[in-house]
Image 1 (spheres, rainbow, N blue to C red):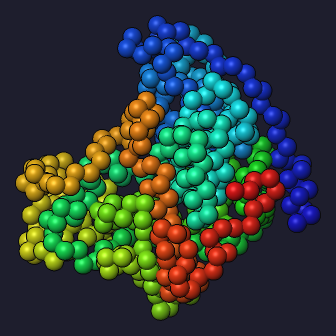
Image 2: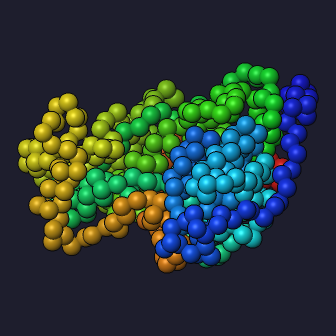
Image 3: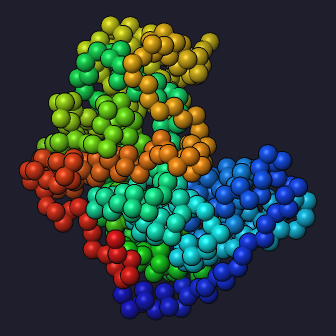
Length: 449
């Protein structure tokens, strides 16, 4: 540990960025329909792989202006700042130096000119940054999984509500038509009484055990670890330089939640949407018999009696008394009475059709007069911006993101501890087995939630 601290002191001290007012682009370079004083000023916190995609999307929108970026890695934040400045310089046809870069998110949030922030840090930072943002009066687009533990999910909901903020969870599958139509088929009884659900994604997370590497110059490793434990630096967690992949910090219990929190946060979200379990959740968790080595097999059981099982499968699969619905990104299949009615799953085998055609035909044939119509968002970013304007909840409101991630954490408990559990989804406490300490974590330094 002494060596680690020495390395950290030597390499990781970063000068605080100045808090300067942004350079605002002349109104002539924006859409005539977007008045300068109506644009939202955005800040981006955590500018790795995921937020790089979000940044590119928002840089192309006239109704917003990116004025600040933040990352604990010097290379990543300076790269993001350069990208913003170059994009707006090209748009303005003149030099632009209006984007500030910060090491500390608190300095970005202290700026009164920033209206909203996009947060895409590692999971263990989601809650702390999100809570600080809404307390600072910012609306938030926060990446999934919503939080690192159950206590944080509940605390974040309270913070969003008490500060009257808009919070969109980055569960973007809700804004894709194939998932909405699949959920509507289930909710309207098209496949009959639901008997079971299967969700397919990867493994639970192991405990962190990577060897220490030489520190990365320009990386504030102490702040990267933040509320989590101060572990020895390894580039698997925070890659050196600007990277274009999703780092494996998500495959650690200390900083992520494995694929159960990563992809599970997508597919369990859709499963609960279809089951009508938003802002609710399972009442029972059944661990696999060989839990110490198992990577599949945990079941979440809902009050209706319907089990959701973690499998290797098609994505999200609903099985009813009269048929089946299978859905994944760019994939859709409806089976009724054992016969495939509409399907686009593989472009090589499903030639002559398309995803859009099969989903549209399904909607016309089976949902034209549906009694249950779900929230229809065609674009997750648009939906967030519209919610900011209307002050109405977005499609993946914080409470929905919370109920999803709580189910992910409950599934992980089965793999981590091997217990069958009873759960109260309203009181958020165990009714059988479990330990209250599992609901939170030990926080380090000033970063307590």
